[in-house]
Image 1 (cartoon, rainbow, N blue to C red):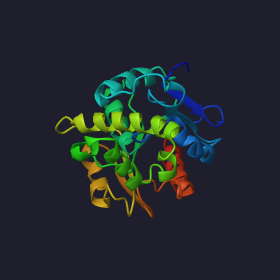
Image 2 (image 1 turned 180 degrees about the horizontal axis):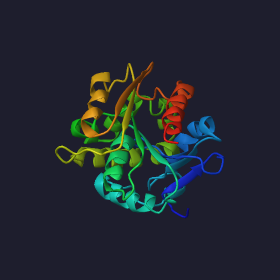
Image 3 (image 1 turned 120 degrees about the vertical axis):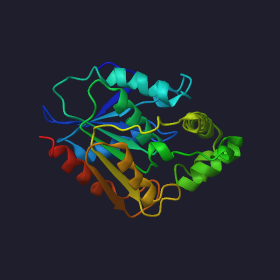
Length: 243
């Protein structure tokens, strides 16, 4: 693998399934390091690194979700054809993973849609893009960062531009009417998520012609941080069933 878009985390046994992870708005590949540690050595984690953050911070962040999906589909099509592959997308990453799955020559064998409204119901309040303060309020409400981080000018400058670019991409995104994938979808959501209700997460069922399951965890938009072990067990069980 030689791509600016992918980071390999964890040590996996030969022939292990691969889980391609798509971060949330403003997120980076490193967000999935804890999950990779939970899943090794049975599953190999490949985390997507969006431009404009961490080791790609000098690149302009993307603002077109569908263009990014087309590029990532081409990247992922280069993975070994023998690998069993699943996608895991959190928040914005779930919608991006869905659009990549629609374009990939070899779709994933399971798609985990975490903390996200379904593609047909993705909605961003335009007021979030009104200015930096609005972006700050949104990411603080979701628990994506802390006031202490935003109070530091250097960290603030690292955090806000990618978040704003990702929200711009989401605001412009429109799913094709009736868009589905043949891939089974497992939706995961926190029961107190301020932006995604359990019912909204359940509408991912409308976007697959295959099997659908809904897993509800205690917690908010970033429920997977305190519930990491339970999430890892769900992922492991689904990928083990692919054998």
